[in-house]
Image (cartoon, rainbow, N blue to C red):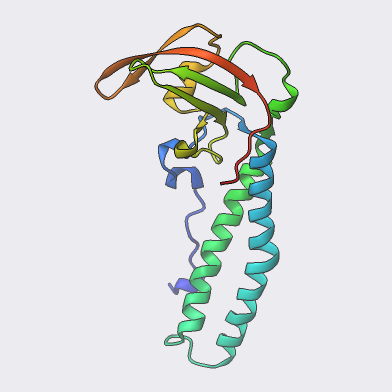
Length: 188
């Protein structure tokens, strides 16, 4: 059968994701307002700008005749499939999103989604982490996914609590020094 009539896998796009980006089955896609805006902006850019421009290029390349050796056509069709796959993924993520604004949480001493937590590691160094959605995580900036082992260890902890985190070479104890709920910036 011609490739034109075959359909790419319509399976769950989450299967292709690394485990750190997968949302546990039956869970909501918790996300901050900034993360929701970022995903929405990416979707709008792909759907309203990049895809229409690429469709014009593909149509032009197709009008040139032989498509089997037409690089613009072949690359354009491949890129369209990539864009369409990403658009489906983003729409699904946004559809299942539950936006949680940490700034509206108020003064809460317990760690939940959206908390910015300062902890003291076993070696005495302090570190600050913000618990965000899986699509917003950036460990180098201290933004950790709510499904990460560190966030799961911290959830429901309070100031002065000691939590145990399993690390590759055993267990590490962390002391919760501060819990704050404020707007979380995703900008670099």
